[in-house]
Amino acid sequence: MENKFAKVNSIKTIIPQMLQIILNISLTVLGVVLSIMMIIELVEFIQMVFSSEKRDYKYFLANILVFFLYFEFITMIVKYFKEDYHFPLRYFLYIGITAMVRLIIVEHEHAMDTLIFSLVILVLIISYYIVNITPRERPGVKKEKL
Image (cartoon, rainbow, N blue to C red):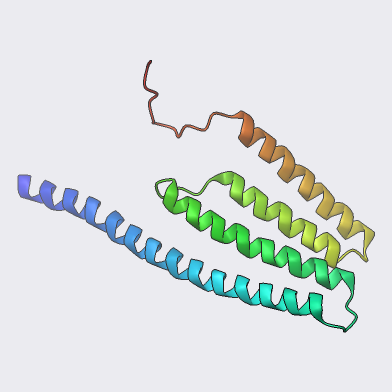
């Protein structure tokens, strides 16, 4: 009987460890791919700045915001590894705000869409404020008494 419990306990520890390894490898590969795409975006941005061809400023701003989206995703992956395999919620909010600003810049022809995107940004900013005023400790982590 004790042997069955030992097998169950070893399975309960092995499966999460294997999945954590797969997740870490996947996020590392994703980080490398995003870094390459960010470098490509940076090269395109530099070419755009030094080109004599006239470009629409909306296209220029959209490329800058795409660059920042790559940057934020890479930063989030770095934070995941630095913060003991945990994604901080505020980084998802940063990405959402940046994506909505990009949509307003690119898709601003329809007033109703712009209004909805603006309301989404407001909700994300309020959410960010709430995240910042709440304690940063994870549930179940006890504070050390001084």
